Length: 287
Image 1 (tube, one colour):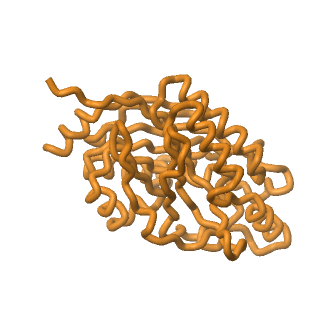
Image 2 (cartoon, helix red, strand yellow; image 1 turned 180 degrees about the horizontal axis):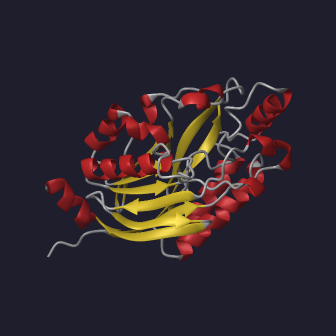
């Protein structure tokens, strides 16, 4: 009888410490350890979790908005750096793979940041990184454009691992590249959006992110860990609270290789887990 690798996927739905790289790294390390204690094989975070999504991006160009932008840049993450060294160390110590969204600082210019997914192995090594190809809408005032160099699938003992940021799941070619490499476990990192306040309201991003993530799972025949961000008004530093437009509850899910939700939605700060098997992946790809 064929024995298939089994694994446990963990989606970490939590708020970072905004504008504080070191404190956010501390919290990330704690959450990674907690996911490992729950038996997780892989721990995934939301888009630019470290040290947070640029919620101020669409604000008018005032002195306060530029102050927020400067502080955001000052807390960005170089790869490698002491921050990534700490993440690698905790991954090695806990024996768990990690995929985490980071605001990556360009080492040469030190004036550009990227929306980056960082892949870390349970051996404590950086597997690779993927920079978001095209920031969405007002994000273009904050993040630089990425490239296709990071569109890679990583061979892990339990399966092939990939990831994309947010609206890249609405772009056909990036997903095709990963599917063509045989992805089996995929991290879909999103910033999160609130639910509509009225039935007649336009379809919000939380609904589309679930739709696109389920479609990706079905098309690729892979598990998808859809991780949404948490950001509440009280978690935003008071000096920048006027830029906070709406609370972000997360809306995190884990989806099987046929596109069915097997865990979630998660609410509040929590670690959502679900078991997986390579048998389910191969069965979906064979159908």
